[in-house]
Image (cartoon, rainbow, N blue to C red; front, side):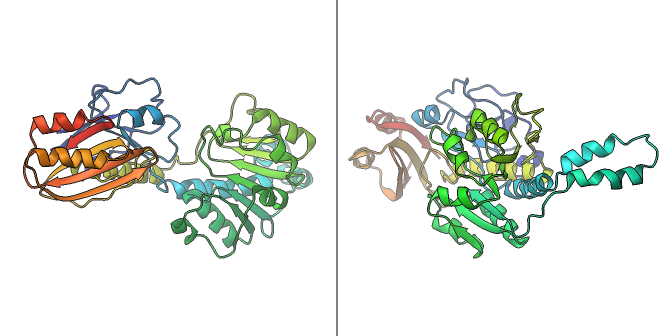
Length: 387
């Protein structure tokens, strides 16, 4: 029986993929559970036990999870890229149009007419102050061409916008999904200088925090509208306020407002609604549950943010999985130990990612605790599981 603790409310659809006869999934379990499934809960203060082997984030961002700590302890951290992409895409496109047409301001003003005489005439008289431009024919700059960025770029192309995309780490698989009408910028400056709208779709980490700051704002067109549905820390707030004060940035639309932004006249503050749709939440939950089940039952690792991808089919063999440092002769030491105990390796896989490697071995016979202990004692071995 595998134990998986829920750290947030998760769609009950997960029980269709984590059957109760094999998985105890509950928010009332202890913190030494084998796995965790989480949405927004802050895990940085948690002290994970040796029993914990996997954490699944029902969403794309993992800044609420201590990735380095998990890697050191051999805990596989999964996310669900693309599961909430459509929900975020629709909100980005809608918010862009709303900002361009001044809909939030118009909506607030219209409510002030309540109870006055001749509302239709007042509407006609006052509507001119909210005139805004159409997005067709304008240029949208998409920074980050992952699952969400590509969907935003393609949707913007479909409504007649010119689209410039920038992503120095664009994968070949992702590239196939981009509309032929999206121009890929080789340098960020090209996008900044040409875009009427700029939307961020990159992860937040030590390298990207404050990604848009004074130097980047200075290169933008006057009156640009900036949208941030990725993470709040990607934009340096003081630089943003300076850019809005000067007229460089006409409006800033964010799904991650802070206290200073809430009443700023040029900020359209949205309370983190990007993935807050029943469809997105269910898609993320299903994807997270499937990843945990595949890992527990076969050792397969897909969509991990800290471990190498390794897809292995189910097998009737005794399967041993080892997370270890990516060092010379690590695999040799593991296989030599297996051979020492007269165990035959029927099949194996080895994948690496930076300083971390993952080895999967199918054995013809059961492995003894003595052999397991000896493998674990090898310098560089982090975590071993027998499936």
